[in-house]
Image (cartoon, rainbow, N blue to C red; front, side, top):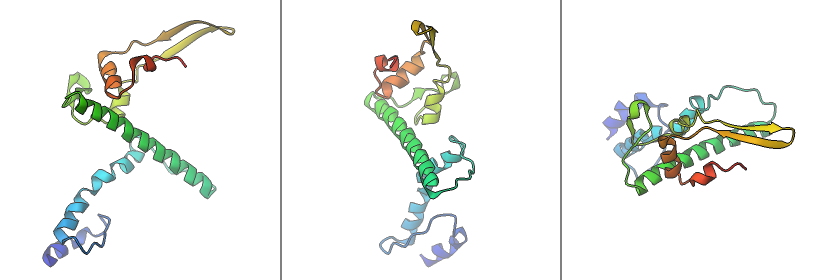
Length: 160
């Protein structure tokens, strides 16, 4: 065991260290290997959310901004969870959301929302009178994602 510890000593700082007297060194290393899964959401701060350094003059503003990002990550995780649970409930191993109708077993929120990039909604007004509403028709893939997420189709089209 000590040899294993010494051989991985060069990895110090790569993984968050923990002191757990009830785990063997091999078990601790195995726990560390799962850490990137936990940090996936934090990676998305720079990729999906494109977070960049900002100058905030007070601790309250920093806390507020971090709270907003926390909420965004939470909502993202809930969307993925709902769709994946919907897939499981409907016995679907994958859904075709990639280009060329390729299957996806674990859809991400980023990929799911990109399916709705072309959706538009316009209202034509004359003074204070609504003349007409224009909506993009949704495709079968979009209908499937809405259904798997547990959103009733009529709610999707609800104006207010």
